[in-house]
Image (cartoon, rainbow, N blue to C red; front, side, top):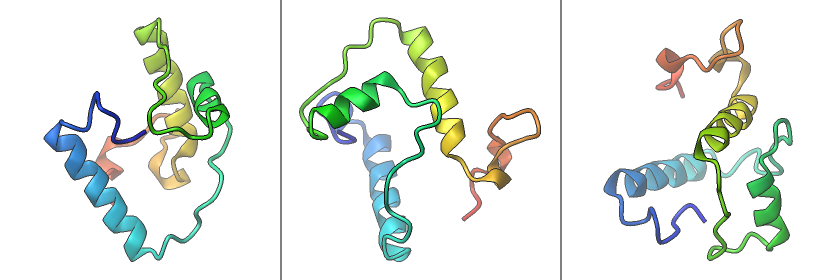
Length: 97
């Protein structure tokens, strides 16, 4: 799904996926498992219901709400050192290992 037809042609996205896979390999795929379900997106639940199909695309009808919901979920996945006291992602910490 991270390389779906809509975005896989974007060079920055391809670079990001490559860096991510390199990082996971360096970590010997440690701590792989289920993602936290805090603020779980309906699209992720539907994707898993479709057996994590690489060809299934969610029907997103409200982009603004989806962005809000995605950031809530993404924030919940972050390590504690990456979150401010107000619950926001600290962008200056992004480059930390």
